[in-house]
Length: 201
Image 1: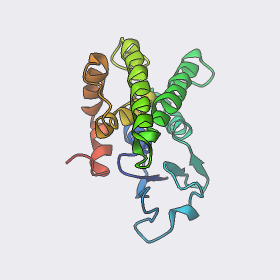
Image 2: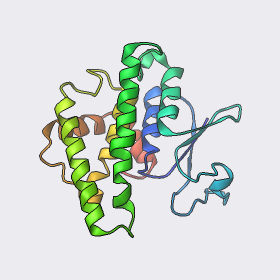
Image 3: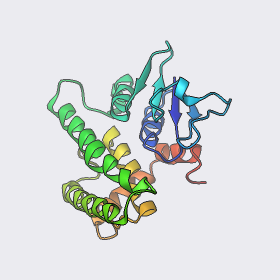
Image 4: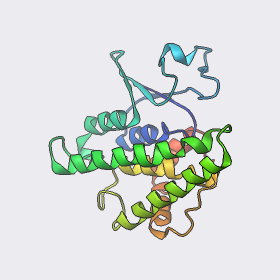
C-alpha cells in the first residue's frame, strides 16, 4: 500500500491508523502547496482533486477521504480494535464521531488557513470551533472517544486538534481535551507517524 500525505495535514490520521495497525505501507509526501511528489510527479495525476490523504492498494485501487481510508485500515486488522465490527451500533457511533470531526471541526478550520479570509470571518470560525471543542470536552468522559480503547476517531480528533494552536484557537481551558491530547501524543504509533512526517524529532 501507498499513503500519499502532506506533513501535519488531515492525512496524519491515516498515517497514525497505519502505524497503529502495524501494516506495511510506503509513505509518499504529496505537499499540498506544490502538489509535486519527491520523484517530480504531479500529484494531480494521482488524485485529480489534489488533496490528501489518498491510499493506493496493492492492486492499484485508490481510496480517497480520510474516514473511508481509516475504516478500511482498521478493518484489515480487526484484532487491533481500531474500529468496532461492521453492522454494530458501536460502528455507527464511530461513524458518528468521524462525521462530526470531519464536518464540525476539520472543515471549521478552513477559513483560518485561508490568508485572504477577512478577520471577522476568521473570528467567527474561531468562536464556532471553540464552542464545538467545548462540547467534545464534555463528551470525553473516558480515556478515548469510544471508551477505554483507542480507535481511528481518536487519531482523527488528535490530528485536527493539533491545528488549534497554529491558527490561534485557544483550547487551554478544556482540561479533558488537553489530557486526551497528551495521552494520544504519548502513543508509540502516534510518535512514529509524527516523526515520519517531520513533526517531532
